[in-house]
Image (cartoon, rainbow, N blue to C red; front, side):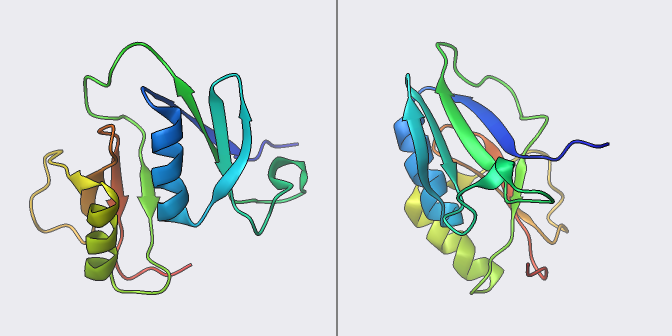
Length: 129
């Protein structure tokens, strides 16, 4: 028997704001909001973790008192589904992302951004789901 990846928990200062940002990035919707913790997931697979086999993971945002202080050791990679990488980067920057320097050389095929709370993520090129 194995486990399956069903959700990623993200500590943050503003669960509502970060949940809204990631809903717009991923086309997700709020699935649960309880006790200050907000869970978002794919509207195409609303039963998520209760399904057999792989599922799109949910993201859970929980308020914590401390802020982010160092580079993430774990980050999300996103793939544009209906536009080219540069167009998607412009869209994400308009949503509140910003460029992040984590030691890139400039030769990478991906672009590193940070969400509104500074969590790094990469926008990949040339791969479509």
